[in-house]
Length: 205
Image 1: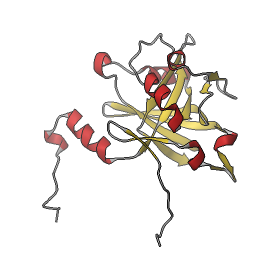
Image 2: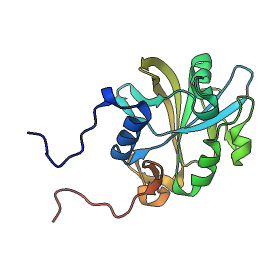
Image 3: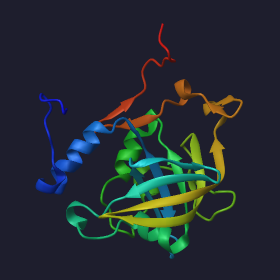
Image 4: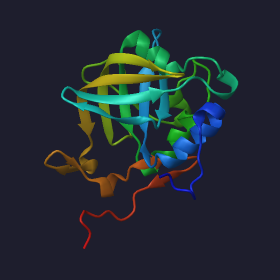
């Protein structure tokens, strides 16, 4: 029996933006994939996406959902998706709390010829096995080659196989673990962001 005190939302009778707000306010906190890519002419692009998770452990595969262009670019395809389709390689950088402002700057709707690395004051770091650079200032980066792009409604699920993982010594705890307390990952909420507070194991005492 459904909870009689709950608000019920039927996506069939709602506009897309309202259902989107329900989802992004409920599926929280979300990690942020800060994707660096480049176009066929070599112009770099950097943009954050919070529909992001691990898709497979073997082969190691990361999944990012990329939506359509918004606001003044409504009805267009985002530069990140276009670049990934063209070059079939990209880097997923992970965002620490101290890079929140540069990440926000890179999220703005620049034209495709603008280099977001430059706008955000960040340094391209050459990758080991792909041509797309990572964000040097990011403590963790995954070099990815495209596996497949799956259309899902208005969005596109991008699956990329990890070719190399880079973890800065300041973020590494040994034994293949990261020092989360030290590098302080940034998380996406609805309109806001959050960091991790006190952690605990289960079961609780």
